[in-house]
Image 1 (tube, helix red, strand yellow):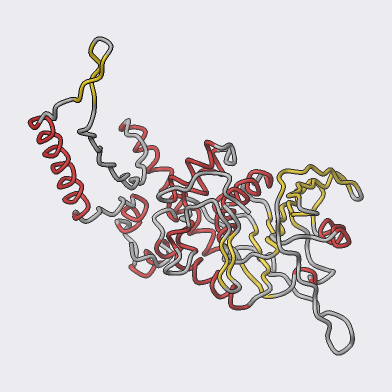
Image 2 (tube, helix red, strand yellow; image 1 turned 60 degrees about the horizontal axis):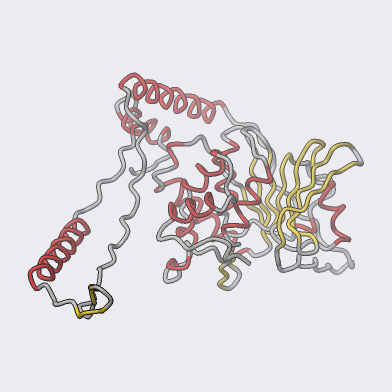
Length: 359
């Protein structure tokens, strides 16, 4: 499934194409997509395909097409502080984008059938927190993943404001999914080859709307234990943040607001991440051209000076591109980290405030 938009050179190009095709329609969703580089969730050697609007699968690792994730993010209508459950959380790519919108007081849970994929998702999440230039620009709701079949969730599990299921749901499992949703909540899932948005309007009432024609692999049916019944799976607890964590959130928020006020006072535009430069296409001049005089065509004589000038200009452009490519890229300025490191605090506390990031 996919191929609805043109391929991009990089993550920003892909998002530009998704916006142009109206798959991304809101600023909040756009910011989340730009902050998480889709290529970071691909295995080495497969990243060239990351910015195509196509699904990707390698073993148990799977990513849906970008146009699907765009429609899902828009249909969920995410807001800060909501609770979210990702059924079939996979690589954690979608859950991480959702976490940027939910903020530190949301709940972000995922359940995934394959234990190796959960480990992969945890590694990618850790890499994002430690290394991504985007992390300090957002208040983040860190996803928590568990291994299990989403059709075996314990009956006493809590309900969620927003739910997404990343596998085809059979009609006889539709009500099971709906019960996990809070009143006023939104569930997005593929049913009978239609990506569907379901809103719970009351204890026993729902409203549905088809979003997009899709093709998803069906949910895997749960296996039974020796008693002939499937084992239940417990979801992560909805824990209350401790005082130490709350202090970190509010210190970082205060410093971030202070930085934004400083930037506004100086009249400076917000810093944008540099885009990759597109390759120039060398122009080919056809020397076998003709001119029209009266009612006859005559061969155009080659202009050696003009051709030499064009070749020289082309050579200069190539040399300039090469020299620019050889220059080491300057790392983006992290103003929040700079503020934290200047605080009169012990180094261990500064490390905690920066989430032990090294840059």
